[in-house]
Every structure is written in structure tokens, then in C-alpha cells.
Image 1: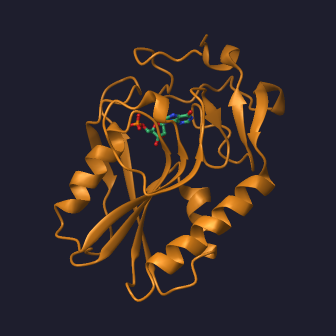
Image 2: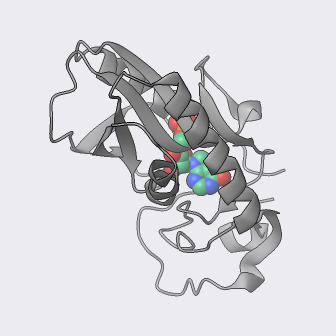
Length: 200
Ligand code: IMP
């Protein structure tokens, strides 16, 4: 591809001319059915692994909202859910790993088993920051459930404990993931045409 690390690809301001349509999608990478099947598997696996541990899921807004909803529907053990909203510093969205917490957790996670829910792990810098942030709260443990994993772009060595799908180095949207705040509502994951984001 495509989006080199040095290129900005997530403008902070919504472009009113962006009219999301299926024509913007180069190809469908993951269908709604494929996603539902995999998310059910992840839910069953986490439910087994955390039986008797009463975990707290920490969902990272906004991208993880749809994955969070589907994953939690497949959790069959007692658990709780909290949200964090973060945003990158700087004008461009190229991940620097320096993030600002826009909304912190509502409840303390001290002594709890935490599972961070992320939409996609790209460079891994954001997750690195989040792991550090959560570990500093004296938790019993912290693990990561990420809907998508783009290991080819990794700049730091972070472990994804529960990964939905590995994806190639393409810009993907849908199922919560956006470009310029658009496409989050698409029920599948698609590769965005480079003309749309000015890439390639
Ligand atoms: P990282 O710090 O580079 O791992 O950044 C991860 C964040 O970048 C994700 O939580 C997404 O918000 C965003 N991101 C990375 N790749 C994509 C993509 O292909 N589509 C949409 N958002 C992406």
C-alpha cells in the first residue's frame, strides 16, 4: 500500500463534503456474518478464561463501540463495563503514542482484572500508553481484546491477548472504525478506496 507512517490520514475536522457511500469501498474484507462468528468465539474464550474473576472491560471510545456491544453480548460470566475516551495530541493523527484522556473511567479498577477493548492495533503506540495507564492503577491483571490487528505496522512490541482478525496494511473502515468520523455505522469491514483519503 499506501499509508506510510509519515502520512496523516485522520483529519481532525469533519469534511462536510464527505458523503460516505458503498462506492467508497474498494472491497469487503470481513462480512457481517464472519464478524459475528468470530466475536462469538472470542466471547466464549474470554468467558472461559475469566470464570470466577469478575473482570471489568474497559472499552476505548469511539472506535471500539460496536465491537464492545457484540463482544459483551457473548460474555456469559459476571463482569462490568467502563469506558475511556482518548485522543491523540497534535494536528495529525499519525499515532505518536502521546494521548490525552478525554473521558476517564467512572469507577476505580484497583485490584480488578481488566480487559481493554480496542478497535484496531496499528503501530501499537496508543495501546502501549493505555496499558501503562491501567497498570498504574494497581490492577490485578490487564489483558487486551482487539477487534483488528495490523501487525505489519507495529512500532512497539505490544501483546494482543484476544485478536479478532489480522488485517493487511490497508486503511479499513466500518464496524466502528472511521475515516474523518464517517463509515462507523457500516456493519462490515471494508478497505477504503485510496482516492477517498488521498493515499497511494
Ligand atoms: P496505533 O497507536 O497506531 O496502534 O493507533 C491505533 C488507532 O489508530 C486505532 O485505535 C484507530 O483509531 C486508528 N487506526 C489505525 N489504523 C486504522 C484503520 O485502518 N482504520 C481506521 N482507524 C485506524
